Length: 302
Image 1 (cartoon, one colour):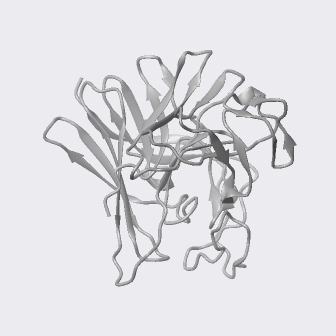
Image 2 (cartoon, rainbow, N blue to C red):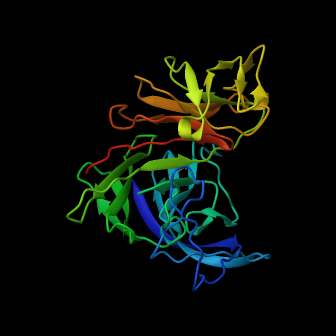
């Protein structure tokens, strides 16, 4: 089957956001994993509707015989759904309702799918519309590019999603451009959500022997935690690679690895997800309280 791209309107139950605050209170020194609360000139939204209503979105579908990928340019260019046609399963968590929480840098943030974040943290524009374009490649593959010029530092970020004929994986390439005369710092990482239950297991490379939480404030052995980690006693030994044995929601960041992969496995469905990237470019691997959170810089071109 050839690779196809189509654009369709999809109707998704949505809890709509309120109007931006005219005079938002920027919390400059808030604890937000190192990010400042100063997001000017982004509008700040501080209210979400209590009732959902149906809302139409323009969705871009990228498909071959193995996978169907749904991209929502109107919500930051996120991958809303990634479907395995052979196993008939979503290999990332498919959130069928858009219900923002006010935890983003500029307010709204939603769970599920794959979110692409830059130049800092969970991306100030994660809930805003971006441009998109379709590229047809000589080898029969097709790429959907999403793109924006962010308004805080005037840098440009792109993510390209490519499917190939006869290949059962999604390739993601990031491109970043500094359009200013000055050096600019940045993060670029993808944040895939997965559905978890008592059968879920995180898969780190075999050389990962220790993990820490956000900010490197505490450290634990991995995969068998034996000490106290964030005031929780894991003695005499807890397998923190298995979701059902973790006593409290916790994030685990791999300290270092010389391997190029990380992933997850569902023992009930005997399926999972594997992320592969050059560890010299994409060094970070971590798992969060909702499943896998992959901090990556896959295929970055600067």
